[in-house]
Length: 473
Ligand SMILES: Cc1cc2nc3c(=O)[nH]c(=O)nc-3n(C[C@H](O)[C@H](O)[C@H](O)COP(=O)(O)OP(=O)(O)OC[C@H]3O[C@@H](n4cnc5c(N)ncnc54)[C@H](O)[C@@H]3O)c2cc1C
Image 1 (tube, helix red, strand yellow):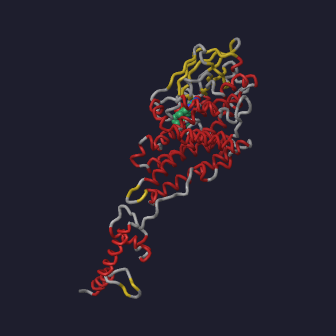
Image 2: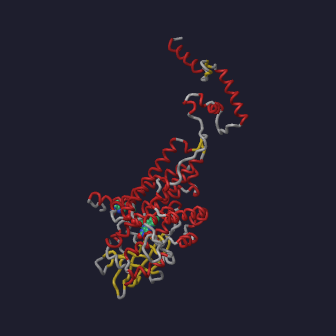
Image 3: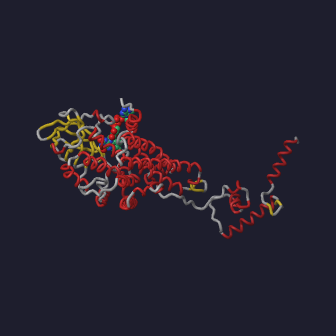
């Protein structure tokens, strides 16, 4: 036998000897096996350890863990996992930005949603808004949010946003219903109306006695809002509106429809008009077959020679800059909290699942690949949430620019796609079931990538500010 082969045999012999020592005596393999079996029987009879799905040698190694090498003990199972995580909102103590009253309202929404989760299923299937949800929002008296007066609860902007977040955490559609009444509704009236108009419109909208919607997008003019073809023409005592709008949420249930139109009697300036339900020539029908944000209904609006009285033209929205553009700054910020909530909801569902789902003898949260996904998602969520809160605080202080807001919205809607998709992935096949929620958030996140200006358009708005060069055309 050549020397090298003999050496290998000797090595093998060494390896086949036992790993246990008593004092300076190393046990031979037979004695070691015998002792191990005795110990095994002893512990088995005492039922001291409950270890599932382990083969015999792993079991023995576990029992003897402290006597063996570190490599041998590495595979030993830990106790049932108990992670240090409560929720994405609490992870960096976001409640510090809320007053006790704001926290209370956010918690109340959370409790209500948790108690009713299953009651929403049929409404998601039917693609309709549950009346019991609208009634709860009414009872909570949260509508009006940060508006001053007219029956508003007068929350801070961050408190208002935290409630959008909380609704989005369960369902983006529910968040959008409230947002359309507030962010693209009451806030717009607040910014664009005279005192007389506010006194006429706001109390009913805040009390949720009347509903409103925001009609900007048209079938052939989406991103390029300035290309709109809806017109307003001055006539005696008011205006005549003609055109079509597509996508406004809550359009079918709206008592008051905000219509943005080019005033052809005033240099084609884009101005805002309030069309009241029942006005001759106005109709709103639901857009069918919507896959995302199913509980909130989007509509097609037709305007054929609709007369709008003079007092229903927004007094302070004389042009694109003084009206529409100003409203979009705030609404882009508040709607983004709904997207944040959806991201958080998807992560929390995936986390809970990963902690409970056992494969290869332990919860999947215990594998390195799953931990990388969980930490990556949480890192994305917390950095987006911190960015968003910072942007809102800058806005509140009158410092945030449109470019900063557009960048924040674009960034979060992009990251949200990745996060919700990864959350779904962690849930395996069960991830495609409604009750595991991540896929619903993932589909809704697709709508968030387009609504309130597409990702591309928000990037272009931000890019224009960053470079001083407009790249839209
Ligand atoms: C769930 C949801 C709710 C909505 N709610 C409302 C509402 O309440 N009221 C309302 O008025 N509207 C609403 N919208 C409409 C929304 O504002 C529009 O969908 C959006 O402005 C984009 O318009 P579009 O869909 O016509 O896409 P288009 O403008 O046709 O864009 C199609 C694609 O082309 C890209 N694109 C366009 N221009 C450029 C460019 N210059 N450079 C590079 N890429 C470009 C876009 O990014 C997009 O990817 C809603 C939409 C959704 C999905």
